[in-house]
Length: 429
Image 1 (cartoon, one colour):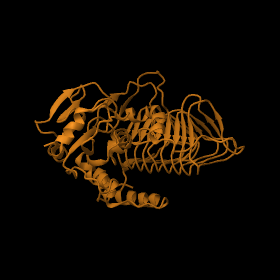
Image 2 (cartoon, helix red, strand yellow):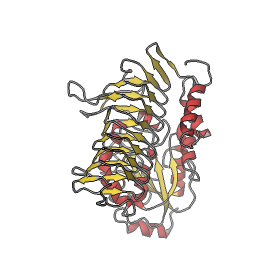
Image 3 (cartoon, helix red, strand yellow):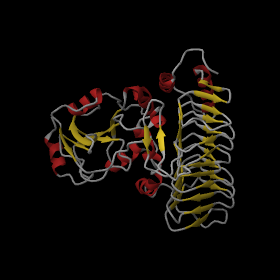
Image 4 (tube, one colour):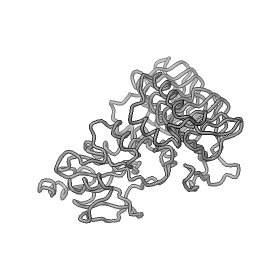
């Protein structure tokens, strides 16, 4: 039962400010939508959908601590490893009320919250948010559904993402809002130092104190905000066009062009021409080549001269099949490049066609473009395709992560093993 203090808090709610009596937030990844490789190794809560991940944005907006996460069962181990101390698919600590937020709400949480014991649904019947007691949230966490005692209502509210491109093709729209969320303590306006970047335009430009710039850097904020994180280095004559965010410890190569609506996650190496693209973090595209309207997973590495197409020669609606057994979906977008899964790699000179999905752990080394949908752990060369042997994949993954002083933990290895079609068998290259 919800106590009287909780109910008093609920009765006085206006928007997201009336959270009295709530013990915390339960982030709900309901496993719905079509996200392909984006959610092979993470919950939708941990997808970078702007400067922030979606979960971090939701938590900031409501000002409550994370109490628990509900995720698809196959992700429980790796999500628990990435959120130490937070119950995953288990009841939270506390006996008061809890706010449940669907992590497909990419734009954050705004507007009125539901009343007590109520779940707000979208037009498809999916839970958008709910305010419930410990018993109801425990039922959701352990079984995936609320008990019948929780009332439901279909309400207007933030749209829920339906497909992978909803995450990365709109990330630039969230940069200015995320800067506001992070506050004045996140970076400062550029100074007029002769060795600092040349800044154009009036949109916000925020630069962390430990970021460094070589001569000739231009930051064009005429169309949107620009954010440069801690320990970022931007090389000679690089150009950055807002809205754009480059997050901590990333290196931007000499002469790079980062075009609008781009988010480069932490600890990346980027060069060439990149636009309308999200790097989740810890990925490399150090060399020349165009990458547009795409998503790049963690630990991916794109060889020199890798290029992609993001526009059909018909100028038509781009369709994408995100996984081999998934539907071919119309994106409703004229510009849509590719999805490149975590730990995927491309050889020098790789050409990627419009609307391609490259699965987790795949290796592409072909002189012709890869298939439109590349299964996870595909080893593709001009001699044909086979399955990347899991022991060899693991050895490479560990070597790559060790270069950043990180290790592949047991939960990540178990999840990768579960995704591999032939893990433990001596097949492939």
